[in-house]
Length: 189
Image 1 (tube, rainbow, N blue to C red):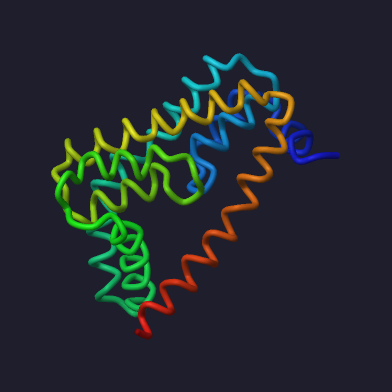
Image 2 (spheres, rainbow, N blue to C red):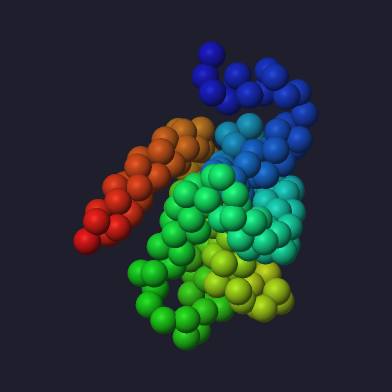
């Protein structure tokens, strides 16, 4: 039994399944679309459902994450909160100044690689204290672009969509480990 069959066996409604996959922080719209194409669902319905599902957390994160992190920095787990904040802000540090932040954030979210989606973009928007409308529209447009890129790749390579999905999901821990190693090295320097 492969990964797609396993998921389909446990969640019978395929559109609910891709919606849930799109809500997950690490797979987001990219994983949902690839899963939908693996299940041979209509590409346009798949895109629409995955876009809407992956967009639900954006305003919630933008409105709450800064307050949560600030509150946690005053608690017993302040080291975790500080580490989280530094990790998110480190993702933006390679982009340079905050000039043209709207476009930089849009590109950050729009490039469909693991750990650069709507969740990370929303956290960045909040922690950089962007105005709500600027951060929201930047992340939502980036999310739409990311989904369109993955949809195009998935449609062209639909027979291999399940393999692309598994490859994408397997990159998540690799990129996470590389990010942690880089962060540890930069904190020592």
